[in-house]
Image 1 (cartoon, rainbow, N blue to C red):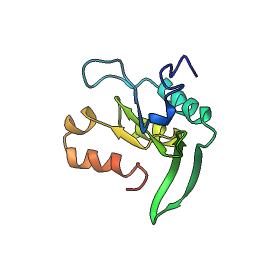
Image 2: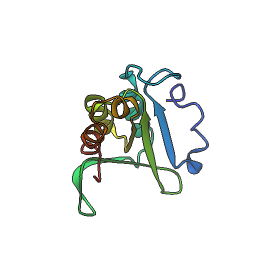
Image 3: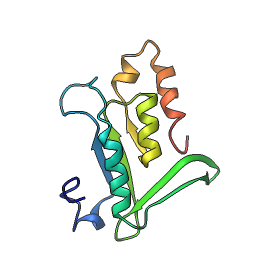
Image 4: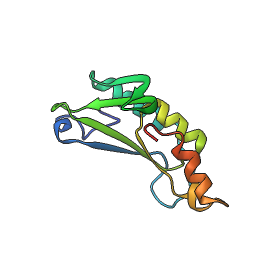
Length: 126
């Protein structure tokens, strides 16, 4: 875990969001790196207060609802950026991500509204 997230240990009480980059840094449109799925799972395993459930939450469908809490009991949100499409987004959401950042899939599609809705329908609390 320390190799994957070397700067988190000792600072977890200050963290509200962790963003994982699922591509090499640089230009948009790069290929998704599937090892980010295991990074999400490793992060959730590292903190014992993480929960994963298939349930309704506050009246919203939550296909997979994951929470990782910092030392203050505040939920830490996991975001994944890069290489997002319906298949890769489903993988990271199932692993525990709450937010996906998708640029190329939406803005380079023939119909950005449809592309956006495809991804939004995958996310919890839509």
